[in-house]
Length: 211
Image 1: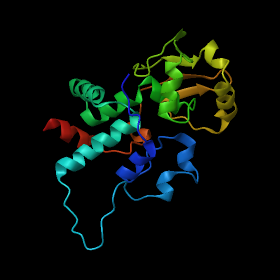
Image 2: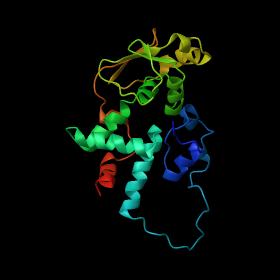
Image 3: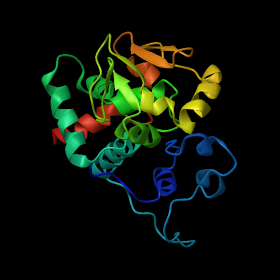
Image 4: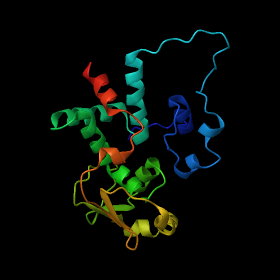
């Protein structure tokens, strides 16, 4: 499975905002963006002219930002866009819903992982069950009524004990339900785009692919 394997803190500095790709580390004093908020690479010297950024470059920037936040490659992201176009409703909002309904994102939103990359690894290792069956596909699209829980294999890990102790202080979006006692979650309704807290503009992404 292809994925970005470079330094993720560099991405936050490149796009000028915290993308929270390292979970709790991003909220602490060790965050690289807090210590070095300037973009990576050679810095401009005083007196140099600033080049104007084109509209196309700004659109590409938003698309790349969304890709890195959800940890998916270009081909897969394009397929999500085409799927959103075919569905009824506002394309940009539908795209966000499709991304939010990925299994690795749901595991992250439920508080079972500190970041989407960690959630992806948990799923890939067979620590999560979907509707009573173990699955190792992070991109699996979850539907309303689907339930996820830790597999017997996952419950024997040290990570499960750590997550279980930290569950009380975590907030879960309204479109999801979580039972801290059984360490299970459920998709109650369709994701609310406003609650997704997207750090990108989906309308700009639609403009990028519409050209």
